Amino acid sequence: LYYTLVYSLLNTAYTLVNIPYTALLPELTDDYHERTILTGYRMSFAVLGTFAGAALVMPILNATSWPVMGGVMGGIMLASAMITVFAIREPKEHSKPGEDGFLSTFAEVLKEKVFLQALLPWTFFITGTMMIQGGLVYYFTYIYGNKDLFQLALVGLLSFSLLCIPFWVSVSKKIGKRKVYMIGMSIVSIGVLLFTTLGAVFGPIFGIVVMSLAGIGLSTHYVMPHSILPDVVEYDAHTNKKGRREGVFSSIWTFSSKIGQAFALALNGWILAIFGYQGGSFLPQTKPGIILIVGPLPILWYILGLLILRHYPIDQAYYNEMIKRGE
Image (cartoon, rainbow, N blue to C red; front, side):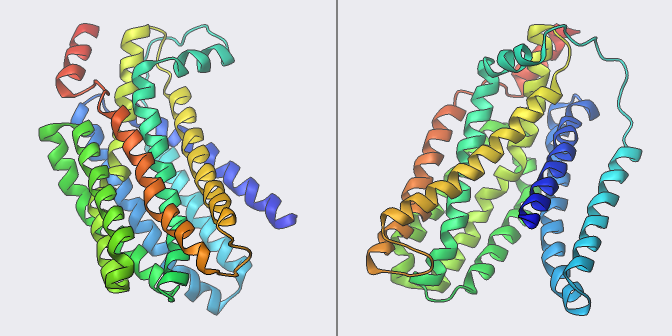
């Protein structure tokens, strides 16, 4: 109970930091492409931080203890947040916020069609990706018979994602964020399809290579949605004339990601239970359930997200014209 409470408080604190942090980007620049560049830097450091955290945990733990390791990581998190607090200077020349109430503001934002055309694909892509991430542990453990190989596949996936961020940022300047995001998630879908149809046939090396290459597409999921959101904030400010509401958009964006993650893990558990998996006991009839949560179901989430995202209207020409009309 104690650890559950502490973990919940940690997640709450992280969310309290993450929402205003996400809302900062529209304040930093109103340039369509610069927002993608800044997001590229942000997410590159996020992936590097993932690698650094994974590399530091065990040496600290082996030399000291869990409380010391937690204190070191907490100190790093606090320091990074404080750097942002004291280093960033927000512009002051914004219009006054609207007079709508708390609930009515959230209700109005959730009725914004353009926002939903960005929010729903983001949520569906997260749901599919979390299902795959959770399912791969079972796939490598019970189908490949080597749980440790999952870590290797994850490193490959993140490495290719990190290396391809500059490439996709550059491509987005030429063809737009929406098209890049759709291409990227289509690549992920193809990779997942290959993994689930041929992975058991060609073995774990093939599986690791395919999932690593899927990181080329997953790279867009790290950058494009977070650079699309500020454009939606700008659209809302110019269209509804009720001031800037990046905090509201950011909070719904963060909440939706958590809903997607939680639902994905719950769905994985329900499906595995239906196929007879119970507390580490693997039965032959469980194999189709594992394949289902690694491939076919996540691909359905991806397809649904892509169908909605294709209608998202804000490209660079649309954005520049909107800014011009607002001047």
